[in-house]
Figure (tube, rainbow, N blue to C red):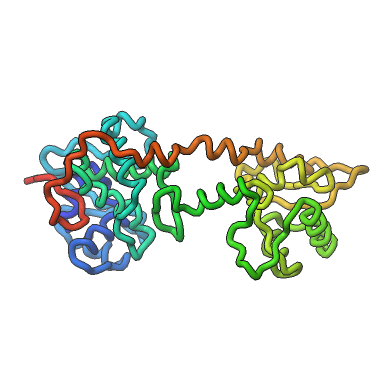
Length: 328
């Protein structure tokens, strides 16, 4: 365990619980439980837990004496400019390799970023010279900038992601996640009628926004998919002027979390307005169109064009583990 922690120190990667669990499993084939992992760290000389009484994987292993040559960690929560992490050439290669996919499929979604970073380190000689900690940050940046996406909790090239599917469906006005034999709400008139019916069936004369889809399915036997109406987010659907003036979104404006669980929808009452009655766009913010979202995503052709001067990694027999740096 001390060797793993020292290796991560020298690779600028914070030895947190998830990363230690992944690294230990890659090296030994054994996945330690939280208690087994924390006990192993506690009983390893020269290492201690921070915080010491953690019952989850939200801890890090700290060396009492950092290895010679350690210069610090690259903290994943910090917003570093891309050019401060890797060179422009390395960034182009990272985008190119990840656009094509091919990394191992992990059995634990908690290991998804480390799995891609370790795979990326073996793609070329240039990638192999970049520290594992920096590659972890690169994978996060690729996710943030929509070069990578997620499907079933795992990382995939963005064009294979659930988000990209929703964007395409929204642009085409098609439902998402609806089976061929399932009925779904197909137009604005039908949506307004369904919302009115659900609200009138409620004894409170309003319904939780977070429950609308579930109620459409259970009470009306219809699926509600926002992509039919050109949106990828349900709250943005409720903010669309096409819904009309017949509905009011209510919530506590003092709440900082403007999520569906904090909002309710009811029929508008022209003769009465409450201090908590707020127009959708005041709570949800301005909508972003599907075209604006797709415009922010790099084109597939650009992402998959091979950069020049890629030199393959020479160590082709090494398993998908971080390339370790030497330390005393």
